[in-house]
Length: 244
Length: 244
DNA sequence: AGAACACTTCAATTTTCGCTGAAGTGTTTT
DNA sequence: AAAACACTTCAGCGAAAATTGAAGTGTTCT
Image (cartoon, rainbow over all chains, first blue to last red; front, side):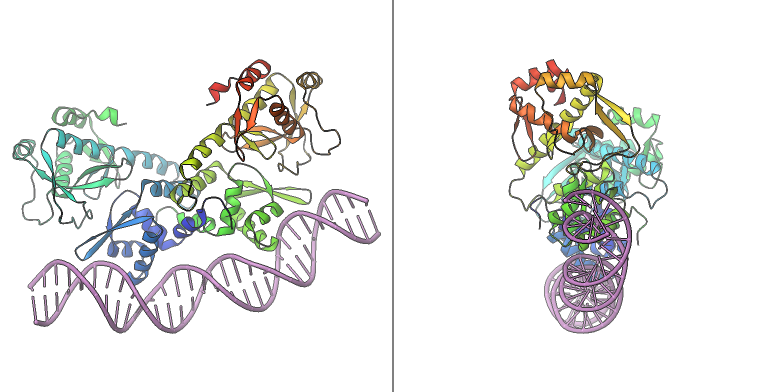
């Protein structure tokens, strides 16, 4: 019909309430299972399965099978940007629009991703743990998935012996009973870099809050305290001011 | 269905081929008549009329009635940004994707808007003409519309006596026979500032090309020559390098 | 004034699309 | 090995939406 860009098919894919709900749910970079998304969208599993198939087919999301689950995430950061751009066009429904704008920018700096840190801060901490050799990368073909965060990729993070001591010093306690993988990376959408998930990610965030370094300000927004600024700088060599 | 932003309705509005074609056609800030858009979309006038009504209703475009025409333009720059964001998600169809990216950035710097200059250069020239008092603003409630460019707003640009001399010196010849308004402003989408349309706008671009100051590089992209750089600087005090 | 024109509204047809339960495949648990 | 679970495929139902010509309103041209 028109020689220009094929906006119509993409927009049509996003223009169905259930599919839009899926994209919004995935917009922060998480990878969620089909069943979770079905609840989110409020439709039958069979219905959502069809929608997910179309979204995958259209290149908007990608699948990562993991056992009996299939985890879906946005295929590219451009998709998240398109979702945001559309949200900016029609912000009339939710009355708080200015609040939401600041929320959106805060979420990009430091936020939680389910139960661990994400955003720029999450990425910085992940880098720091690797640099100080608290955590090491191990390539491993068949790896388990974190049922909370979603599927990982083909390589695995492990805690070094030195790391175990350092973490003990910091007071980070790892839940031994859980079968959930110790460390996992999670691809951060806004930064396009991996951050820390798994049991370690959750334990770290928990410890940071106990230490009074961070405060859960809002649903997913994290605020860093003065103590947190000095603490992160001393223990992890992270300049939190530079993250702004 | 979901408490988040109402992306679905906006995306659905954009997800129909005819409507998408309309939005793409309007994406560069032009205001086009319904009949023009019908041809562009390739559907019957009655069909397009319905689509346009829905787009207006959804707040994506706005109407400006002018005589027996009705001119449509994008309601807000956010809409153009959303269209661009969507185009970035699905650039797979047209094979040239890198080319198109550079085209998009070039179009923002200097481009033509039908038959006159737009983009940053168009805005700069408009400013210069006002500063040097070649053109003056006159508030005028009922004004005519330019059938090529589209509808104007509520105030009108007129050429001053001094301006007439200056333009004569430059060799700009205005077509006297046409009933098309002499000067009109056109709201530039990418700059959010008015630029020059009407007979003067067309005559200026024409003269610039004859002088060898500019070259029509592509469909709507304009390239400024070395002569153009010095000429624009001398005659209009425009630093073309700063426009990059 | 009349004709041509631009556009919208309307009613009817056709197509498309979403929804679902039941059945099927494969995985994990016990 | 059997049962529970996660997900997909399929066929059929129902609703929403796109398309169009014809008719109606208003404007401009001669």
